[in-house]
Length: 287
Image (cartoon, rainbow, N blue to C red; front, side):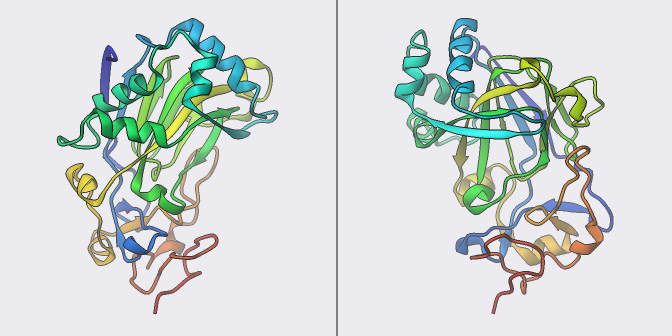
């Protein structure tokens, strides 16, 4: 099992006026007129007990060979499999069990979940994720509004994982696995750059690139409720003055939400994103 698990608060949200809270709506029919607040924790699990420096070097050679990240803030994905990971880093005896064990340390699937539940999450999808810094963004398309994400740091020279609206600024170490809510803006910065994503810090050389393994953790409505952020009718979030993160636009450098005043009314029942090619506030309305 992983040797260390840290939990960081991510619920002291920095919400721009005129709003008082955050929530995320959905593109899926089951939550067409519901929303949930962001999960208020970030988990960091030390996985170096199974992911040695030698294994990380082998994965870096394999992963970088599958992606293309030539310019600042390029982000690229490449799907992989457990068999591919075993071939690339044969020193890891049980990839599925090792990553699932790290996820199980977080407890995000609830008290009733067992090792098999976490193993199913890992087996569903694993990708290589490569970047040259990552401008601030969130991930809420399709089913992602009901998922947590995990990233496992393979090659992360002098880089921090930052969530500007939640006060999270964590300098990453190789072999760390991070579980977080992708509805909140997140990015990769240099620790010395004041939580800003600066082109000059990532534009050139191998030292400007980062590599992770990544996947998702789908949660049921009951599991979201157990985490303290249940799906509720949009009217409940409207009463809380919630800004809909589904349609928020972020400044890539600072994470600041652009033109928040234009998003007033985003929690109205007359707004629906189900079936929208590219949800934007006011684009699609329910009947």
